[in-house]
Structures are given as C-alpha cells and as structure tokens.
Amino acid sequence: MAMVAAPAFGAGPAAEPRIQRLSPAFDRMVAPGTRVETIATGIRWAEGPVWVEAGQYLLFSDPPANIVRRWHKGGPAVPFLDPSGAGGTDPKLIREPGANGLTLDREGRLLIANSGGRSIDRVNLVTRRREVAIDRYQGKRFNSPNDMHVARDGTIYFTDPPYGLTEGDTSPLKEMSVNGVYRLRPGGVVELLEGGLTRPNGIALSPDETRLYVSVSDEAAPRIMVYDLDTKGVRNARVLLDAKAMKARGGTGLPDGMKVARDGTLVCSVPGGMMFMTPDAEPLALATTGAPIANCAFGERGRALFMTANDRVLRLPLRAGWQSEG
Image 1 (tube, rainbow, N blue to C red):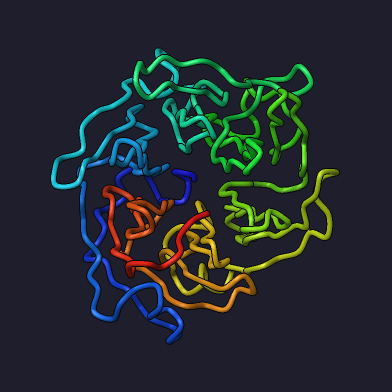
Image 2 (tube, rainbow, N blue to C red):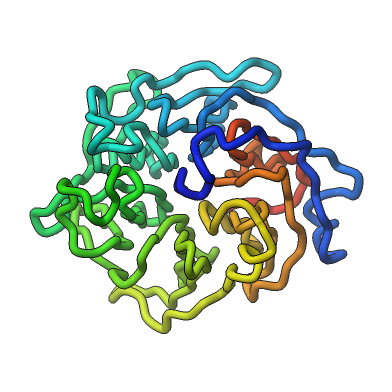
C-alpha cells in the first residue's frame, strides 16, 4: 500500500475501469457483462479499504490528506477520522502523515497502519477512541507501518517499509536497519519474520494460514513473495509472481495491497491494475483503469470487491454465493 506506486500524488485521474477476462474460471466469481462501479472520487490517494459488516459501510484511507472516509451504499464518502494518522508532522520528515492500511481485529475494532505516527493503532468504531497497539521492535521505532492481516487467533501480521518517511531509507528518523515483515501475537510479543526485502508492502495469509504472501514494491524487482508459515516463523521463501515484465510493458503501479479468498484465489495489485489469480499464480482476470490500483477488500457478505484506484474507489459486484474472504 504505497503512494510510491503512483508517479505522484494525483498523477492523473483513472480512466473507465475494465475487466479483462483471462480464464473461463473467472466466471464463477464475476458474471460476464458485470460492470465496475465508481463509488467515490476526488481523493488524493485512495488506500486501505475495509468493509464493516456491523455498520454496513466501507472505510478507506487517504494517506496524504490524513483522512479516513466512510461510504454507505447510495451515499457520498464522508470524513470518519480527521486526522487519521499523525497531526502536525513536518513534511520535510514525514511524507505520508495519515493512516494507510486498515483492517478489523477479532473484537471488531479498527486497526490502523499509522504511517505518520509510525505505529499500529486500535480504534473503537463507536467512540472513535484510539490507542497504540505497538510502535517499536527491540526498542526501535518502526519506519511507517503500511499493511496488515489479522489471523484467526488474533495475531496481526504487518509490513514496515519506509514510504512514510520523506527521505526513505536515508531519513534521519529511521531507526530500523531493515524494512521488515512482523507479527504481533495476542499477548503482545512481536517477532520479525522477514528482514531481507527492500520494499515489503501488501500482506495476506492463505485460507489455512500455512502460507504468507508479501508484495514487494521495488521498482527494480517488483514481485509477490510466498513463504511457508508456522508457529516458528517463515521458511522456503520463493517468488510467486515476478512483475518485471508487467512493469516493462508500461503497466502503472507496482505490487501493492492484496486479499485472499476462501478458495485461495488471490486478488493483488500489480503493474497495470488488479490481478485475480490462483494460488499457483495462474491469471484469471485483470482489472484496469489506466492508473494504479493500490488495494482491495471484500465486502457485503462476499457480494462485492472494493478497489482503491488512485483518485477513486471502485465496486465490483460478485456472484451471489461466491465464497469471498475468510
């Protein structure tokens, strides 16, 4: 979930969204002829969508504007948290002051990857009171937490690239020697799972939680990694999708946010749009707008996929009964 995936903030509005079907298997998920709907526009950089079933609304972030907005079906997107991240930051030091990735914990609280505040925060959706869940590892401040996934036992997996820091890896604020992938256990123990990636970004688990997926938004080596996962950590790192060819063909954006459906289907940002693919990286379809699509979220009890696409938010209707995110 990185604004660096776009040439610049507001780097030209997205075009009319299109779905390019690459396999007949995609028809079980999306009926032929289904149109992508635009539900919100005028956003500086749309990110971090999460569907709140209890309230029947979508939340999404706008990191450079430092706002989280809420959308109810049939209505406009309105401010929900303002500021969403850190207030009063110095742009010479903090490039991305607002919330980036959003998700819900097992108690229904909003989790925020607070890029500007350099922490993972919890927010009560009723009172909107906020608390810091974690902001450091081994005594050092995180870079700028970016994206998260919550496992069934409540463990929070998250990425910590330096996108929120104006000078990135050379920022005087950077305390970490790595751009890491971490997990925060329910008891408060935090573990570094992977410290060898240049730009870890989107993150997700397989339905059985034995695989960890991490997108790498490295201009020189854009890719999606997969790891075997257990209680001891990760092993057997390998490239699931090498996106260099997509980037070379002129695809806008980089590997970014992702979600995994109950049947294992991956929906992930790639250069050129949002890719739907099998767990073995066989392509099913590609959603395109001519601009980067940063992230996505299932919602409406599996009847919709929401996509954040540069200056707007999109809704793709899914077949009734199709099994979405677990």
